[in-house]
Amino acid sequence: MAKLVFGMNQSLDGYVDHMAFAPSPALFRHFIEQARNQAGSVYGRGLYEVMRYWDDDHTEWNAGERDFATAWRSQPKWVVSRSLTAVGPNATLVEGDLDAAMRGLKSERVGEIDVGGPDLARTLGDLGLIDEYRIYLHPVVLGGGKPFFTGPRPPLRLLTSDLIDEDVIRLTYVPA
Image (cartoon, rainbow, N blue to C red; front, top):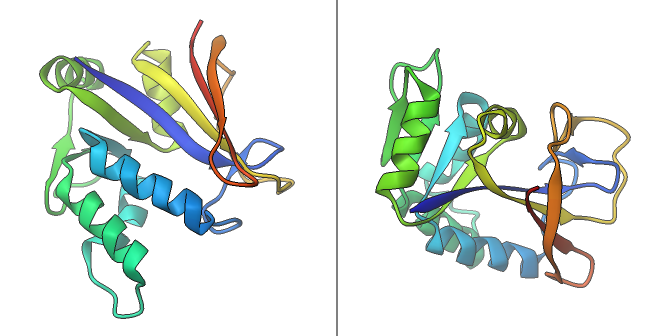
């Protein structure tokens, strides 16, 4: 049985913004390995459209970026959207009953399925479907933006904490 994992980079004041702070080379390598080992990813429309950047090769990419693109392209993706009518390569559009679709996905797959984006994570969390939360805590303060938790913080229990690189701590929580 698969588990749904929501994890993102977060500032000290609780915000996620891939444009405000980027992962270090060590953290990026961590994310490449994670993408290689995932059973897939579930996205809302907004983050899926951002991630489609990795569908096309870019001449300015370094080896790490090419490795991430290869790993990301190879994994299945499920896109939750009421407005999209089609999705890109290796992606399936999720329409209708989200609860049933995600429970089916969890029962059919093995491994970790990444949940992309705070809004989708809140919806899936409200349905009791998120199995693990991973906060990659960066030593920056943004002062505003999109919060990691877009609604009330669910009751959580700290499972582990580990230093991913010299400045980033991964905090892993499970629902309490």
